[in-house]
Image (cartoon, rainbow over all chains, first blue to last red; front, side, top):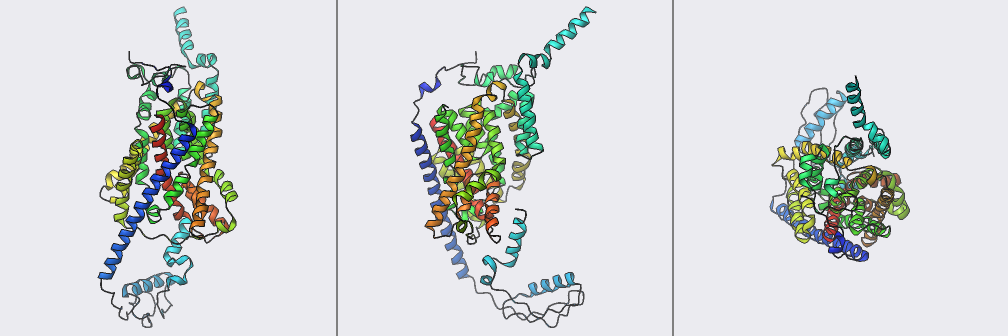
Length: 140
Length: 397
């Protein structure tokens, strides 16, 4: 009761040849993943097109006014900051000034803050991105 | 006095030492179990699975423990059970029998895939869909090993289970083996997890042999950023398409993508955390112990186990080679934009294989960061091996 056995289980279901299994298997794996590749590529193009439309619709960002860097404690001279025209937001200037003040504990004057062009950097990455990649991959 | 002596004798006769004396091969299995514990604890070989597997092996090979009765699941000798004898299991089964039901019924591997999905980032794959092809190419290991196993005399179902080792995916290997060749489960699980731990040793020589220095130094362009919407749509789309084409892979791919959807949607934080942590840990314990319990001297200490271990190495080797060679093809087709080293990451030992690609690439060019590029084929390989598993179950199941 509760047991059944099939002495020759394999004889009931015909087995395909070895080469058939290998060729069919590899072919199917490739076909399914090629199909997925095409669908994801199309999805990516669709979303890229959507993003491009959104960017074209939104107004261009206004030039940032010449910011006055706040005296963020310490002895950092704030009067001499000369940002590149229309490129650096006041908040970023404030953060940079505060970071310099906290690290260097005063005695530094920020003369200029300007964005570095991406193409000038290694691997096309922003400095933070590069630093992040380096710190994440350092153990390997 | 004689009553005390009789009682003592009875206890001694029922002790495990008598069982060891009657069947000395148990001692060998205990030594093998201790060796696997050494590998797991001291050498750090996939300890999360190998430690419970090794300890399950020890528990099952202590005579008289009655922790598991494989004869209720797969029969004895030439008697092959079509279905497990559930009444015997429930009436006479031990802890190993109860835990093993989750393996036999195909519950644990999909739930582990659920947890893996919550920890997987398909971003690198979505931003570079061609990685899926590298994941497909790396499944060459599965099918070449299938051929090798057939040549050695294994049946189609057994050869499929052995071949799946090449998918470098523990849950997939256990899922397929528990359905197609449950008597080989212990050997295949031990081989699969041991080789996964050896990926950093097995892969680099093959990668270096099949690529030129110039190819290894290729720096790939930065991946595009993937929006959250794309990351949410991907698992849904993938599940529907793959499951419609290949229903046998639905449960593995579906659970993987469910876990991923839970993570990417961001609206089910509580259950996502449970799936990836507590649930996965519980299932890992149950799976490891029960799989370890299936190893007994008569199924493990055989020539078959040695052949499985050799074939497992071939599976990993051919999988790596398949991925790297397809990577070279893609490199040629894209005029040098793809570094062939990322092809080896199609062997879906996540994230170990991707790290190996990163290391080998960085050894040639310290400025080369291939890790995120290699993660694409790495996770594609998980999908690829689940698809291959579905195909083999469809043919031989």
